[in-house]
Amino acid sequence: MSNHLPDLLDQFGQLIATPSVSSTSANWDMGNRAVIDLLAGWLSDLGFDTEIQTLADSNKANLIASLGSGPGGLVLAGHTDTVPFNEERWSADPLKLLEKDNRLYGLGSTDMKGFFPIAIEAAKFALGKTLKQPLIILATADEESSMNGARALAAAGKPLARQAIIGEPTGLRPVRMHKGIMMESVKVIGRSGHSSNPALGNNALEGMHSVISELLTFRQEIQQRYNNPVFEVAVPTLNLGCIHGGDNPNRICGQSELHFDLRLNPGCNNSEIREEVRQRLNIIATQRQLEIQLNSLISGVEPYEQAADSQLVQMAEKLTGHSAEAVAFATEAPFLQQMGMETIVLGPGSIDRAHQPDEYMELEQVQPCIDLLRAFITEYCLS
Image (cartoon, rainbow, N blue to C red; front, side, top):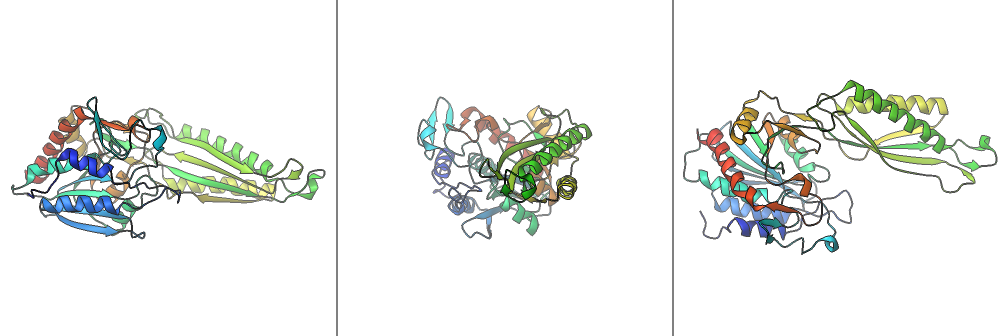
């Protein structure tokens, strides 16, 4: 092991001090390459073989760091990006680690840069031992926006292992299900004209009224069709997020646009549900002689479910003493599953602290997480 490897808290501080915001807004979006280079250097010092996968944006990359070799093994995965932040709403510098009141404060402390020093500390346990299967630490880009890092990994079909743990903040309770997410735009294009005579145009806002009514009817139908009481919100949700249209009260509205999201239960298929929406909107377009366009605002994330009787879920329940749960937030789990890995979400900290000022991880979560990861490493890499 290199004498230059920083200790856990130093790693924590360096990662937080290296900004890596990903966002759908170009004003905020930045690369994560500096974070990847930090992790690659530390893991190389520990004897890991490191592979950096550059994305289409050369400032963004994934890291695959492997110790040992073989067809099975364990992946410890996390994302290196954070959400945007409002510095003025933080009590201290969000890009400087602050240890206070048994908490580690900083942007990404719990979601989820803080997982990497913990995973590295756990990995030291395997150094000098004979690994029967590889230990892989995976770091991705853009989970908080496009998930293009995970998409690139799935397209390349690597890394390959049998089990994967995504260290998102779950309070060290295993998660085996989450909803998918789609974000869609509906654009209604009519014909403007003088409001004194409705025959001079075709009102896009009136067409949008029909669109919204149809979406709300569809929401009721899919909520009757799909229900999973394991989730706090047991049914799929459809949220009308924002709407824009028209320009003046005395002009027939020529164009209107609505943005909405759908969060679907496991058992739903994003593309099939989207096609149902499209067909319903096509009927309105024909009836009202309007042009109606349905476009995706992001590439959707499919719902995720790992079988309750899978070996990884049962092992996680045994080691944690908690039954596997379901959560509302989306993760990269579906993409790792695409590569044939049993996948769970399990990590330190609380999702309630994420995406808000004064984000922190409880210090009391750190050592238990290290111990837990070492137990998984023993089971899947050393046994």
